[in-house]
Length: 253
Image (cartoon, rainbow, N blue to C red; front, side, top):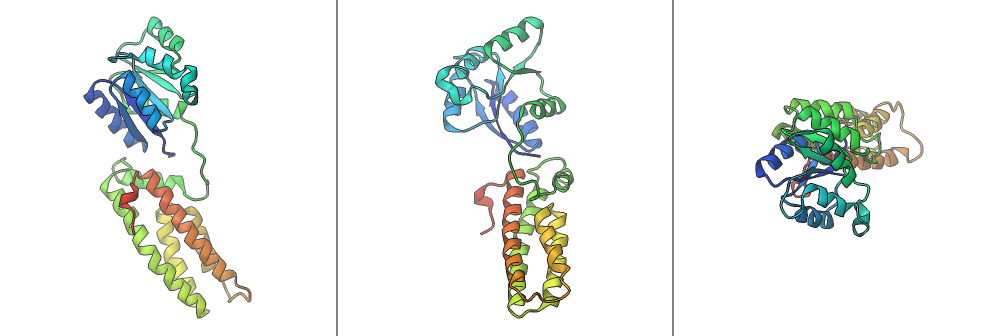
């Protein structure tokens, strides 16, 4: 699940809250606007990958706001997907939305499956190293948390992972200085299991490499592999924090 930032534009606080819960449940971040003018201001403050646009808003309605976004003065957002939110959807409304520059439509009240389909259709995949995480494992962790990437259980698992690994890495560095292959292999086995359970794919692969050593290499390869392991740990931690919507202030020191 790649995380994107969605702007919810609706003058109803209840509608914004419902959309927020559904979108965050799918692992994405949200921003808010209660009017067309607020939409324009929000786009100057933050970057977004998609806008859910209510067609009836004060100041500038959804149609006028979309035309403004598609204009030359907002050229950086000329290609952003804009999805109209409407209570009723008929041929006339659909044509008006398309003429204004909107890309698609979704009906109120919003439903999780329909939101999921719209986001899958219009969001571009986020560039990321495919080897950092095993997405199937990460998704299973989210399911354990009740389907929410921000559940207390998911966040507790992340914090446990981030706290338990550094002491083990330090123990492996000490073992490497002493050329203690037995200790390195034992620690690698433990870390492989923990990393695998968190979906830290590259981290677990490097642990497997260390666990498979049958003799101490004559070169300095073990030290380099340990450096790679530490980098893979931090990469996995950052990627998981992004998916679980863990803010920098929540990071482990």
